Amino acid sequence: MAKTSGKGKQRALIALLALALLTSALSCGETSISTDQPPRPPDAGGETASRTPRLALWLAKKDELVAHENAAYDLVMTSWFEPSEADAIRSRHPSTKLLAGLAHTWILEDPAWLEFLLTVANDGDRDGPLQITDDMYLMLDDNGDGTLDRKCAAPGWEGLYAMDPRHPGWRQLILAFYETVARQPQHDGVVVDMVDAYPFCEGAWSGGVPTPMDAAAWESAQDELLGLIRQRVPEGKWMLANAGHDFPKGSPFPRHLNGYLLENFLGEWGASLEEGLVSAQRALKTTQAPHLVVFAVDTDDTGEIDWARFRVGLAASLLMDNTYFAFDYGSRDHGGVENWWFPQYYELTLGNPLGPYTSAEGIYRRDFETGVVVIATGENARVQFDAPHTDVLTGETGLDFDIPRDDARILLKQ
Image (cartoon, rainbow, N blue to C red):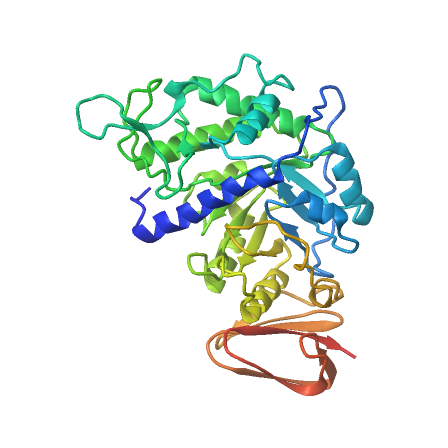
């Protein structure tokens, strides 16, 4: 793996901030851990058609989702689901897949976060034998005297520290956490945040593994750890990861996964439309079935919706059959549902696709039984029909539609 650029470090920092927000998703009070119920295998379904948008919720705010009267997602990811929460979510949308987890190489030194991690890892006993020890942290030698001086943290984010993925004790703890998460019958699988994030720790080492870390060792250790997590996920359950901008070509990580999430898709540091579509195609060859990719679009932390970006992201997820669409503020506030549910877009019905998407001269298009999805990238585009169609955006009906550059339209037959 080549050394990560400054842009890569920025992407990784955003991913790190996303992990911190998992604290808002932790369950209050005691965590109910099942030890004897059989796993609930997800229904992957035999259909590949995107009859309606396939929606995902990243680092979900479960209370908002449960309280919402109409919001129904196909894939929901957060740290943990209580059985009652899972039942409430599935009562609205029975086929919803619920994935839970944290990260495998970073911890947040927040009491609630740590209590959750250790309680689950110890099968319900916060004070059990699996505990975090000082020699698990990746640390830096600031003055070159051979003594470790400080924990390696993400710049500008105090309290978020890298753990040594080579350390046997850390591996035992985080593997126990994921094994407990994976066997819960209400969970359809696990999610691993911040995979392949730049460690900010090149040259660091831990008290337990006194060999300095470099980029190759960071990749290799993560690869081994992901493989060990995969072994603990029951057959038929899914394993997804947050790939950030993208997994580079040749990355070993996808082979352990059923899919991955592209955070900040179309945003300041996220993958472009072309990169995202190429990544989704690559997922078909490099991940395990059902080969999922989540296009996670956000507001770049501005709080102001870029509707053109929203529409392009949603339309991109409809160009292919193995993709989901997620939308929220961004790393400062993932997973919101209140005021972020858009029925005019989410509840439309397109029917079965009539074929794969086509692209020519910067126009991406896919035709369905009852509508058409079009994205314009290079220049403004015009779409003409022989029969009337209605623009989902404006509600206008006609035979001709103009699509601005870097925008998209979903046009339904009348």
